[in-house]
Image (cartoon, rainbow, N blue to C red; front, side, top):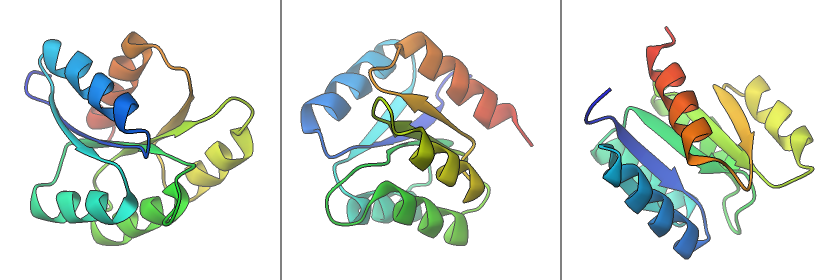
Length: 122
């Protein structure tokens, strides 16, 4: 899974920057977006292998971004990030086509394992 390209989408700039750096130290190529519009543009112009997407974002929320990704690029797996107690949104995301969801705060090792599973999944 070397050079796995991931697009991380979260409105918390410090979170996405830190997560991208941690993933790049482990051999991943990370793109970051702090809103849905930027994420959709990145995915269209330079498609990643997997998207890690926060559910709760101002403006275009994560579930809407998920729907648009699945309309345009259904083959790209999406892993949702939900805050503690937001399992309802995670389950709704699964219904809309997300590969899975993880709760914040998250373990980098759990995220990597989930991304690798998502990319291998047919």
